[in-house]
Structures are given as C-alpha cells and as structure tokens.
Image (cartoon, rainbow over all chains, first blue to last red; front, side, top):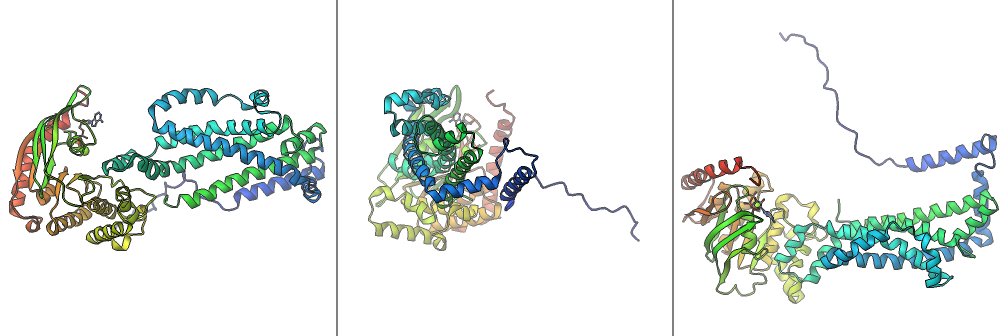
Length: 266
Length: 255
Ligand SMILES: Nc1ncnc2c1ncn2[C@@H]1O[C@H](COP(=O)(O)OP(=O)(O)OP(=O)(O)O)[C@@H](O)[C@H]1O
Ligand SMILES: [Mg+2]
C-alpha cells in the first residue's frame, strides 16, 4: 500500500516579463481621462482656468471644420511638414548610407553630425530667416535640418547592424558591389531606417509648430500661438488635439509601411 | 580543376594560426578538414576561397573551371546565410542575377537545383518558414546553381540536430554520386568526415599544422553508419585528435 504523503501541485513560477497586446486598453484609458476631466469641469472641482471642458474643445473643433478655417491652417502646415521632412529624410538616409558604407566619409561626418545633433534647431531660426527668407524657405529648412540629423544617425546605425555574414555571402558569390548594396545592405537596413523615421517625423512636427509660432499667418502653430496669447483655452486645446492627431497619423502611416515592406520578419 | 595550397602561414596579431599548410584538393573528390576548436580551419577555408589574404603562401587554381561555371569557389556557410527578405527561389536567383543570363536560363537553373535538392514545392517559401535542415538545403541548392569548381563547406551541418544531419549527409552523398563535385568540407564531427571524405586532413591544435592525411577508398554510396572499416578509421582519427583537443581545451585564451 502506498504511504500517504503530503501532495501539492508544483507552484507556477514562470510567466510575466513579456508584453502581450491588450486590445482597447489605450483607447479606454484615453476615454476615461476625458470623461474625468469633463466631469471635473462640470462639477467645478477643476476650475475653468486650469483646463477647458472637453466638450467645449470638441465644439471648437467642429466650428473650425464648419467655417473652413481648419483647412486654412492644416494645408500650409501639412505642406511645410511634407516638404521639409521629405528634404531632411531623403538627405538623411542618403548621407547615413554613405557613412555606413565608406570609412572615410564615416570618419569625417560622424563627429560633424554629433556636433549638429544637440543644437536646438529653433535657436537657428533667425539664421535660417536670413539664409532662406522670411517666408516658407526658412520653415522648410528648419524642419529639414531637424529631421536630417536623427535620420542620419538611425540610418548609419541600421547599416552597421546589417548581418555581416550576409555581406560575406554576397562577396563569396562574386556579386557586384552595387548588387550587394541594393540587394543586401539596403533591405537589411530598412527595419532600422523605418523605426528611425518615427522619431524624425515627431521631431518634424515639433519644429513645424515652433517655426509657425515664430512667424506665420496660417498654420496650426500660428493658431495655437494666437489662442495662447488670448488665453483662449478651448482653441489652444483644439490646436493641441490636431497636433496629436497628426502624430498618430504619421506613426500609423509608418506602421503600415512596416507591415507592407517587412513581411519577411517574424 | 584542382586546388593547390602551398606553404600557407598566417597569424592574427602575434598569434600564429596556421603554419606551413601544404595540401592538394583533387578534382571530383571531397577533402575533409578536421581539427580541434580554434586551430584555424575556418581561417584556412576563408583563404582557400579568397575571402582573406594569408601572410605567406599561396592558393593556386590548376586547370580551368567546368563549362558554365559562374563562381569557381563557392561557400556553404554554417549559419546558411540566406536573405530573409527573399523566398527560396529568390535566394537562388540572387547569385545568378549578376551574370547577365537570359531569364529562361535563370529559371531553368533554379528549377534544376531545386529538383536536385527536393525543394521544388518550397520555391515560394520565405526562410523564416523553413526548418534548419531545409534552410541548409536551400544554401546547397544556391551553391549548386553557380556550378562551382570547388565547394567550400564550413561545418554545414553543425547547426542541425542529429537526425537532420543524417538526412542531409545522405543527400550530399546522393548529389555527389549522381554528379561528382569537388569539395573542401570542414567539420568537428568525425562521423561526418568518414562518411563524406575521400581524403581527411587532420590539423593539430593552434597553430594549425597538418598532422596526418587519411585516405578512404570506399565509394561514398557504400558507406553506412556502423560499417567496420569506417569505425576503424574514425577510431584512428579520434586517437589523433584526442590529445590535440585535450591540450587545446586547457590552453588559456591569448596565453
Ligand atoms: N579575424 C580574426 N581576427 C583575430 N583572430 C581571429 C580572427 N579569426 C579567427 N581568429 C582566431 O584564430 C583562431 C582560429 O580561428 P578559426 O575560426 O579559423 O578556428 P576554427 O578551427 O574554425 O575553430 P572552430 O572549430 O571553433 O570553428 C582562433 O583562435 C580565433 O580566435
Ligand atoms: Mg570554424
């Protein structure tokens, strides 16, 4: 007969430390916060001077849309962001790839980029105004310059991280230099370049607003500045909401690009 | 085409890695190179294929590569080295695209090597969908596609489990029997060496020198696991390697 001994299941000790996607949690928290503020401003424990009422902000946004003012501000802003960041990102990827491929260019440019990176680009706006004119030119330049440096850094990092054994393989099969760059280095660097673009574009949006605050008739930055100087919190926040939406939009676009271009990843 | 290696000597920094290697790789044979860890086998293979320059000595090609040869010295790597963003057929196409072949020829070559490695059904699969054994089959197919004069294999089966390794060894034997190729095959595994090698070169511990060259005459297709002659050869090789491996194991790095 078997002796009866103490039996207990082995306690589970694994699990955790691995983020798993939870659907709707982000949206839920967001909605909860809005409702809380709405309630606070209505009940009076958040004063009108602290935060605007979310429903008023929504009404202001609707108003903006109806009067057509929204597009009057959005179109110049989006144009500036598109032109400026297209210039900066194109140059950044080009220079970044060159740094990744050529030792001489790397040795010369990395210290220069490191010196340029921490400069608050906004501080250079007066200079840009002199170089590129008070109109759109200086704004394009500011955004281009601001997106350029982070793109360079993430691009050459991505090129450096391309699996060397794949490059050796290409050489061992006698592939031409240009084939190795085009078929091995660039696709291998693409994931790193795309994730770098997320940061570059966010910086682009920050600089867009900064440039518009310092001298523009139209644009979201100008709109926010005007609202702020009148202490019109509803309009101020309506502008901020538009900016956040812009940020979410660019990040979604990059996410889509990653999905399409990087199907080969797990 | 034969390969002749003459007086090859190499050091990294002050550390001698290869010393006075003299070796001939005859056409149509598989030469296995065995030796303890760190004795310079991979280094030797890189020099044979022209991926690295030796301090002293030369590697000579004797004769001309076979007709239709696109890349005389062709590697198969331990970690497969497949492009993850190209499917199986695309990975093979990669090594054909730079040669200005007409599209039809490319397709014909790809279909042929896929058939020879039983990969036809996987032509559209991405590397991440394949098991290790399948990935190495793709790498072998890619090497065959350029019709090499000499195949250079650096521990091609080391990343695979024992069963898969057996299967792939059979595949290699079959490929060779149907159409003999020349190969330098670096391995740690003595069982692989006696199954696949017509000639087995035993290197000493670092700096790698040739300790002995063992010839095995038995035809590849007659070699099976558990064969007495092969076991005797393997035991002999192990005896040669054992002392070297022990001594190498006890050496301090950079001492
Ligand atoms: N590029 C390099 N620079 C400096 N030292 C190197 C380099 N490559 C290899 N070595 C050293 O040279 C020695 C021989 O290396 P190699 O990779 O050729 O040995 P191996 O016989 O292939 O070893 P293993 O059996 O572990 O694959 C090792 O001690 C290694 O650390
Ligand atoms: Mg090795």
